[in-house]
Image 1 (cartoon, one colour):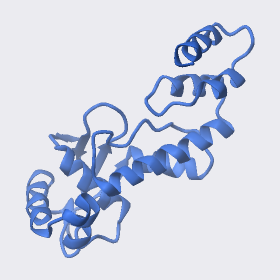
Image 2 (tube, one colour):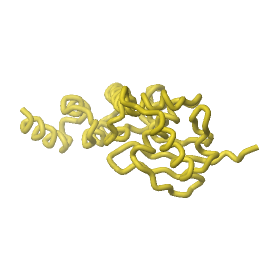
Image 3 (tube, one colour):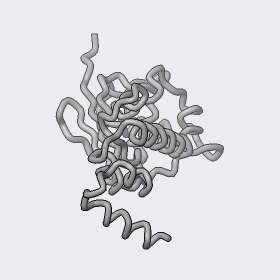
Length: 185
């Protein structure tokens, strides 16, 4: 029986995507991060055609996907990325999956800054927007002033009105929010 590697994916935020296999850091391109995200989102696997469509839309080419998977398997190991269909064979710990699961439970365990913000992949753009909207909804419904304030400083942050509603009248951050609203207004 094949050994099951541990794959950790850190794809939320403005930092460059990071991946580790069994604690070993693996240099990863944006395209490989996109592929790993899709494979994590579709644990049953995807064919080369479906993966190409998810990555590139109508312009997707399965030959390109096969070449990328070949390179990715070389970096992560054949036990981490499986074929027929393409799927992850590793135990996956992904920040975007943790954020999505927590938000679906209505928990503000961690708020998502954008998922792979540089990605132009149609499927990744859709997932990024969906995750951002879901987390934002939970934050607005359940987040306190500290959580909303820390999220306010991110690229997917909450709006000024929501933060003002959560801050106490004597909170010094209110003046910052008022200044921000005046600049935008």
